[in-house]
Length: 489
Image 1 (cartoon, helix red, strand yellow):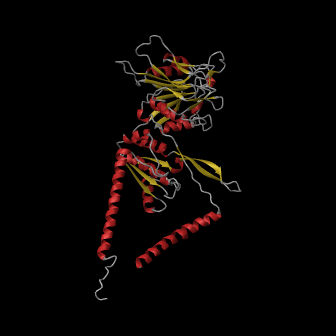
Image 2 (cartoon, rainbow, N blue to C red):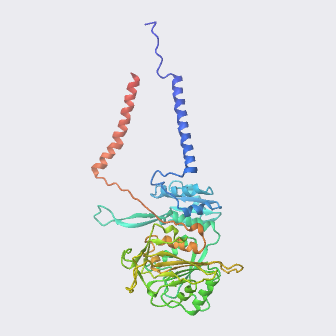
Image 3 (tube, rainbow, N blue to C red):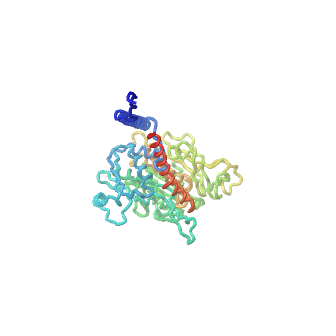
């Protein structure tokens, strides 16, 4: 009919622009709210980790180190982005960057960007054809490089379903934070601390990779930016002036009179000593016992057995700790010591005002006994002690304040046992307290790698392929077709 009113189009140009503007405005508003919430959350409430790849939280020790940095550090990820651990490494480095804006991070994928890769190779002299998957730390030209393969501990396991005994390398621990923090310490500090490791009296070797060796011990000190060197005190050899820490671990022979005199003089000058005894010297003196007794520490000629806390009968699981910086972080954890001896404080009547302060650190359970001492009732025994003596007023020691940590076992820090419990962490706490590095008295350990594996049959894989390639796209097309039909009507 001529008089019939025309029905306006459902989507006039004005209405379409109105809808577009409304969608755009709402999107901007939502994004603004998300950004504001993220900023406020990160600034005042902490960070949230939404996936396994980004769920990385730095240890309190690393946070202290990174926040105190005043140097600019450029980190270059010379990495294949398709590598399984690349997202984890990026997430970890982003945590470092969020703690200190002086840390910058960039990625150069050598498989995709040949031009940039060549520049990096020339800048850092990466001439080896195997120089791949590297994390390069550069602090004003002081460069250290972490190798990607060294960031993970792996073990061999048989491939399931394999008939020809095939094995694969399964990652079990990620050591990125341990390595990165150690490198930051190295490149931002001009000079490392120097530790000397006594040799020549039956002590283990720092280069021995066997179960009884101390190669892992040396690696922990290097991770803490401590340069450790072997030393012998025979003849005219003396303890060097640059010795920040003297380590005597498990001597089994009597030290010579000359050695003992040099060690005694070193301690009287304010030296730092980490002394570890073991069962094999429990029936014969090493010569160190009288020196330690003058400092208020008694080294027992015995062996502690703890039937309540043991795994093999020869070890003692120490769960009880005092309140001391060396062992405060161990509360709630355990140390495993092998055939330990007692290390106790010598009680003195009316000690002088400047007497050394001795504190027992770790203890066996109240059910413990001494081997061969059946007449003694069960009781808790101290297994290690710390000693500190500050210089008297008006007296300046050459090396500062004397500090010692004395432990009744040396086997618990060898290559075989150092990874048990928190033995490795204890080593880090002990040497950092001895060196008076309070910011490092919080541990960093390897993070376990959680691996998720989905096993599917051939039929199940075909069904998933049909679902992803056919059903889901088809459903979207069907829905779009229905919307089109409804709007056309």
